[in-house]
Length: 149
Image (cartoon, rainbow, N blue to C red):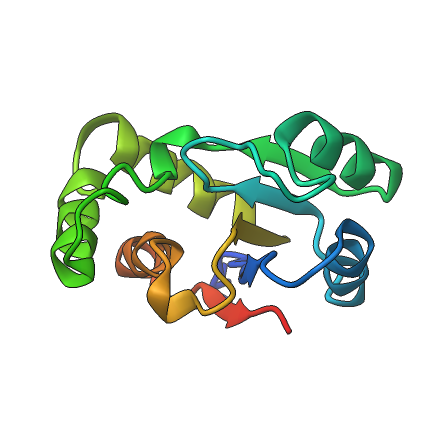
């Protein structure tokens, strides 16, 4: 009898913290059984209390969720005024070299697990994380990618 092995492909949630408190974010992550939050902001600092890298990592750790910052997945083109042009630059950015390796790390992190990618923008369609998730899905179509509500 031949055995067929199926790769345990995981789930990536997409979340923006706009309008949320840290407690509200953590509650959403826990409700969806997220194990790791991957911060895809180029600069992981915020004027919103608790959302800068160190404080957010501490709060997540206390809740049993791993924090990881992936600056190579950050939007390096936010100063480009035309949104579509900026997203196209982001697609090109993620296609090769170290940024492509960061997408591969994201996929590997999700293997058999539930992770979430985080940025500020609530509407994923208006955020560079849409492009990050598209890149991950292009490389691993079996990924389950969902918005975190």
